[in-house]
Image 1 (cartoon, rainbow, N blue to C red):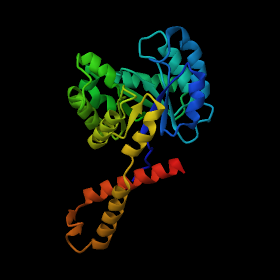
Image 2: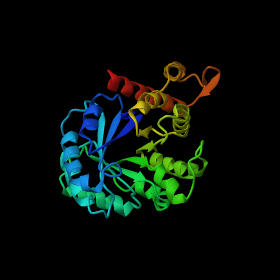
Image 3: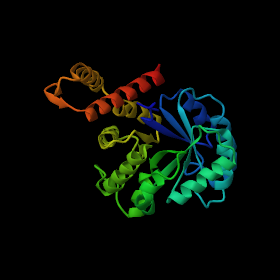
Image 4: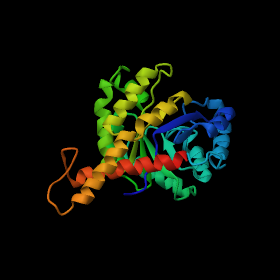
Length: 288
């Protein structure tokens, strides 16, 4: 089983807010996206870029995965953002509205030209109808692409849809993106939940995302971190079952049919159990 990087909770932090960047050092999220796009006013973009680059390269965030979200392709800030992000060397560079495999390859070329270290991976946001139609090619376009990030607010806007419980208008887009991520072997993050005071609705959406297969959820408020961490981590029961299933498989090899809790065990079940334990171990290491 390959190493697993927990991304249960990935919190957007406004890059122009120095206090927020400092506070992020003590928030128990798995990942941070230091934002230069939506949360930063046009007249604050340059200062935010310098501030975020310094924060990302500071080493002050411990074991958290740190990414920088740049401004979209074609904006007046994008090229300078890419250079600054590449030179800061975060774990990821998040690019909004990636619509094609060609854009992925161009972004990778730009990062490498700017001197991005090998560990700095591309995170592509999927948030337009065009991206949904191209998502399989986007996910497989480069080995440097490591994460797909669902931009559900923009998708709702582009579809002329509505935010509703259960997210019926988005299920096709979410499912296609999940299929693409799994086919390409990359991680995928669910979109944000906008009502930070609706704890019940947030938990329901986390549960839906986990059941669908997302690796974690992007967040807009520190109060959403703990529930996301709990929802996207294997439960104690799931860990116990995974260990028991693997023991049964190992004990029963060569004896014909293997069962665990009266259910037949096949290799695919063992692989799922191994993944559960790998995620559990990675979470334990992160929280140690």
